[in-house]
Length: 197
Image 1: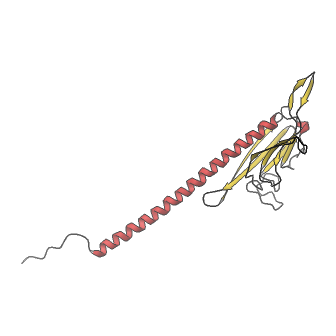
Image 2: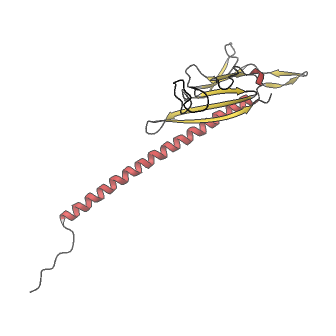
Image 3: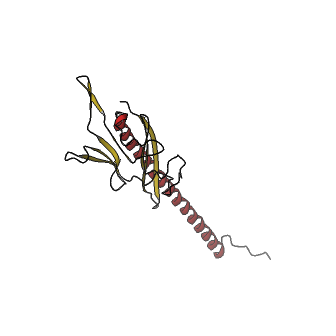
């Protein structure tokens, strides 16, 4: 007599084990995909915030580049800084004399989170425009503790910082916004501009 043929196929236990293993793999794969999406979202937000910061910084540079260094107020000489700056720009020459603009202002508003440009401040003809919202309270990597946390030789600098050395103005701008996971994303941009007049 011959031996009984074994049936080909899976037992119920083998099938349950295979389904369990497949479930674990799918769960881990889902976690990896979600983490990748969060990272991509943070990186996209970070890049968009950096682009915005550079756009605002370019606007500030364009406004200040035509200023007369002697009209900068406050002078905010390094290592001291200011979160606002007043200046006059040359409008041209008339009858051999330089014609200067009204005093213009770039700085933080009263709430310290808006970067504003203004002209004729404190007068009935005052003009005031917000150039950026979401300016950080402090520059990136800086804490309000009286210490130079970001090692740039200045202490507790605000999210908008102007320093002046001669006719060169250094501008540091930090913007922030909430990221996809609820964390705060900050981007800092910096440039120097030499006043042409």
